Amino acid sequence: MYKKFNAELIKAKLSLKPWESSHASNFKKHIKELILKKQNYYCCYCQRDLDKDTNRIKHIEHILPKSKFPLYMFDLTNLAISCVRCNSDKKLADISFLNITEGNYTYCWCNAIYQSGIYKFVHPNIDIIQEHLIRKTFACNNRIYYQYKCLSKKGFFHYKYFDLCFFESEDISKNQGIMTNKLASSSKQLVDELFKKHNQPRLTRR
Ligand SMILES: [Zn+2]
Image (cartoon, rainbow, N blue to C red; front, side):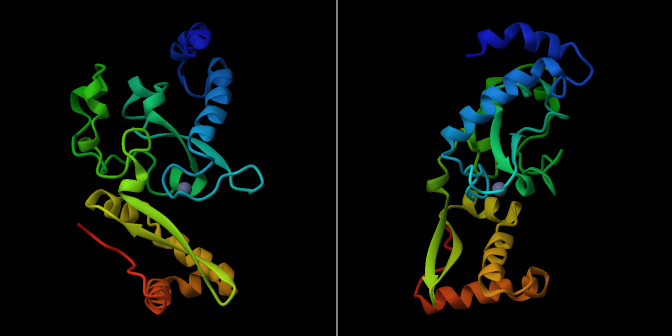
């Protein structure tokens, strides 16, 4: 798949901003649809639906930030599709989710960078998300609610790192017609109460 883009990507890599280069456009367009399909049209981090009929904007996400790990900028293992919120906000150039410092990985290619143990959160292309974190739905008073259930230490870190509680409160606020900011402080309690009512544990840790 890469071969047909090789010539263009070489030109892109020679430019000042390789990822933004027009020579990278066809590659980006091609892989975006390819990866989305592979992810079943869900955000690689929050698992929310990114299907065509929703208005959520989809970003090509560099799991290792391209500003700190430029060598892996066009590598498919380092690319995934995420929603805007997971792609921006806090992640950006942050690497606190790594168990290593960028060090030598920045200057020479090393396959060891793709070991699961290096990542504190669930890596979209290395780990199997369902083994660490599940997004569940349940109905209450004819409304749909969402809940994340953490199944491992990694899943719990993922939940905290991407602040997935926000999406639980977002969904609840939408469903109940309450403004998210008014609900933010009590959202966790509200989710807990709703799930307690339905006899479901909210979070479990190994
Ligand atoms: Zn997301």
